[in-house]
Amino acid sequence: CIEGIGDSEDRPKPKREFMDRHGERKSGWGKDSRTDYPPEVIARDRYPLANGADFRTGVMNHGRWANSVKFSEEKLYVVAYHFHNFFPNRETLRHKYLTYGHPYSGVPRKRLSDIHKDDLDMMVRCAHNLPNSANPDSKRRHEGGFDGYEGSKPIFFINKAYRKARHEVVKRIVEEDEKIFGKYYTENGTIMSNV
Image 1 (cartoon, one colour):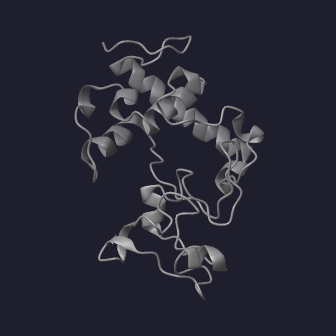
Image 2 (tube, rainbow, N blue to C red):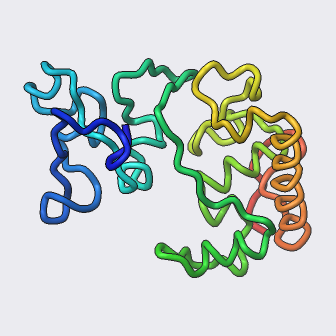
């Protein structure tokens, strides 16, 4: 189901934002949902294969789209995962948000949740085991834990020892960062004011 890997026979190429061939998908080509396709594509049930842009722009990895799969708020069955940002330490994480393709202002003085209200805030809440209700405007995480999640799971995380070790790294990154920049949440999960 990935362009260049999956069976491309009879699959249309989606129209894209740059020269119809590159970048994010255009509306009407699966940009927003599984039903966001020309009628003839839906009727044939042969959808375009995904490429790297689809993973990066959220067509695949933000639950907006799933190709012939079962989807609900609590379950997402996908055909592939796009992993990035597996930071080994807080310095590397902050360097990414300060310098990479879409840098964020104020990184040297902001708390993690203030840098990126979705991804980093969800990481902070996960590290502290805080519920989604602590910040309903941020990305949601599955609160039932790995074993309670019924959707597709990355094969990396099936290994419980690896999963635990990786979670400990994330907790360490958050704790070290909070010692320097302060906490975003109180112990009971309410948002603290800027310090």
